[in-house]
Amino acid sequence: MTLRKGREIGLSIVNRQSTPLARQKGLVMDMTRRNVASWALATCVWPVARAAEPWKWEHFGADPYATSRDAAMQARESAFAKLGFPAEVVMLLVKATELPGEKTSLQNGDKFAAQLSKGGVVHGLKEGGGIVAFEKPVRGIRYVADAELWEVFWQDKVYTLYLPEVCFNWTAGLVSTKLAVPKFATSAPVLGECPQGYVLKANAWELSKLPEHMRKQAEALIAAAARRDTKGATDPEAYKPDDVSRTLGKKLREEVKTRAQVSVYIPVQLRDPNDPRKVLGAVGPLNLIDGVGQLTLTKAQRDMVIETIWPADFISPTRSGGAARIWLFPNEWGSECSMNVHGVKP
Image (cartoon, one colour):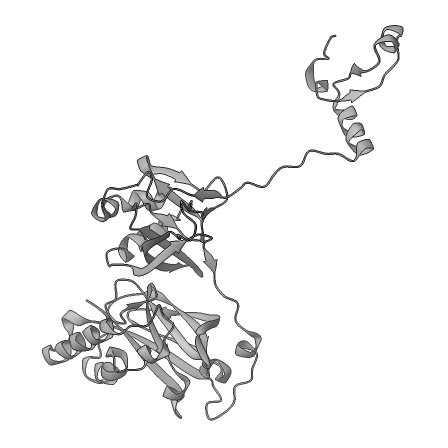
């Protein structure tokens, strides 16, 4: 049998009886693309590409990326790049991981974007992600990998990073996009005593440049805030006591006045006032220029719990739930048309 050359070589089987020899042998091979299509349409069969299966993290503690936390930290910048993070996010994560992450855990069913193992091997990128699927040696035993968690924000997206303690395999979480703002929070008319809207103002300060008595007070407030347990940014009571922003904010504006020379975006989210664990949407971000910025809100937005999320290199607010957060509650506005929140750099 002779195969036709060039572009007519393909794969198909048809019943051709154009010659006596063909009639004797029955089926013959015709390798043309045209007949591939004819055969597929006639039989309603066409090859279908299978979706890639997620890579499974099955072996608890096998093939560690690093032998210790310190070793993982020393190689973290190249590790973050291998995990597929954008260059800007790599730099943000390098800065964020200078501080300990939020304590969390990974367990069966948790999904992630990519993970590194021994030798810098990357898992999950080609497969479209990964999933925790630890093998269970005995019925009733459930493996849980304790880990540290960091979050950074860039271009309206949240990037999550994990460092499991069992193997120090840097793991990139799934990227979440900026949440859509609920209609009631954007289209509601401005009512009440502030017809021009409600203004959220943000201020940044440097601890090292504060007067000594104010610096000591700020250090005490920061230490007290660090001891409070927010239960992973779910307990509103932990965000209500005195802190630098609430206690020293007015003094800082009136006596110090000079803001920190920092220009960043401050993500602003709305939480349900009846259940602040629920994030309803995002507004902003608030553009902080040379340590000061503001964002205009509607009354409907003002009536939510307003969360500002500060850069990882700020020491106040303290970190909770993987990020440095301030929660501003509706009753704190009183009859005011503007409210200030404050962050402090070292």
